[in-house]
Image (cartoon, rainbow, N blue to C red):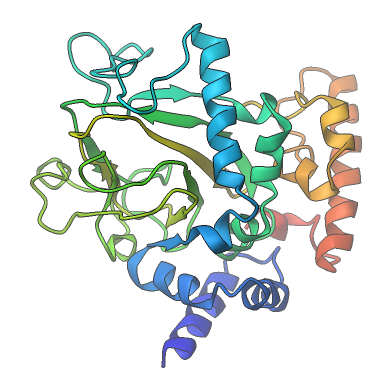
Length: 330
């Protein structure tokens, strides 16, 4: 019955994923032993892939060091991983989230993809891409990659969805979040909060439902360092406040269907050497197959030419001749 439910869900998704090959997606799901995690995505709206599948070869440990290095370069101080003194009661960098109230998510370092080649490797993780393709199709692109560093604080992060439109929300996932857990995650250290099954409600939480501390349906994620936490764009999620010392460090990889406006402006802004050292799908993920935002006739021609090259590459990758048509963006 479980397998039937998965197949039915996938067939339903296919109506909104004309640019993806169900057979290829399922081959990848089976290759990486992800069947049970896909089933959990369907039933709960989120899943936790364990370190042995998500982060082989100590990928998580290397990503943690890279994030600490980036933080030290940007802020002039190495984060205190053990006690969290550098981030206790962190007020954030953003107007509207600062002042006298602790940032509910701690420090957010943005645009990691350009900081270290290891972050390119993290994006191209086949387990991550398989689950992202299941949720949003092969045309999925990177919207943003950042790093949360959360120390002891007093603020919970309100429950919300990631779908960038008002309720009612479409039943298919317009966006998805795949978060690398780089330090152990539990309620005491500020874990992500989820409301299981909320992705099926196709709406945002009402104000009275949004506090994870007061919502009896909200559960804390329990995940070891190296896990990958994955969720549907409609799933209600937030975070509990951190009461334990130390830092909770994670890398949210936020991906979206190609027609959704991205958080990072990547089109035409990726160094060529970065594209050359990766396979064509990396360029597609970094939006080089899109041509939005041109500023002149010459710019439009250049962008369309580059986009055409990546569409051809993705046709070869997926084996679908219709990849470059409007179906690509469904």
